[in-house]
Image (cartoon, rainbow, N blue to C red; front, side, top):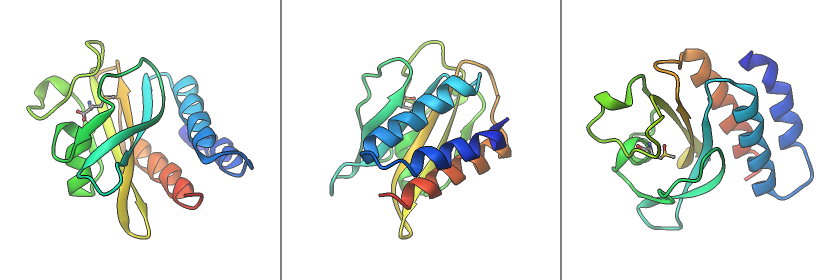
Length: 149
Ligand code: SME
């Protein structure tokens, strides 16, 4: 299912429209196509501050539009440069809840010229849904985005 979406992601990335609109379309595509992707969004480093700023997203609005580095799953990935799969958000101490319905989360960093400049963040209302397949798919998405930034 995820691999079938790759050509659609590439088609969006190749559209000659504003980058933020392409990122919005990718959020919408993933959230609508993958049943366990309930919230899909991008966070990017906020200028030269040690914090993340919310970019395009699909799903319920979140209060967490700014996340300091180190805080929550997203803030930890900003520092670790590693993918972070959370099978059960209740088992995490350093977690920022956006919705009571969320059971699991995956965050994959986005690298531009080797620098961690942001990330894609997926929340799921399904317990423990994420696998290596999701990691590989989201790395593919982020690599494609890096080429248009
Ligand atoms: N849960 C995230 C915060 C962002 S929301 O999921 C949209 C975290 O712990 O960093």
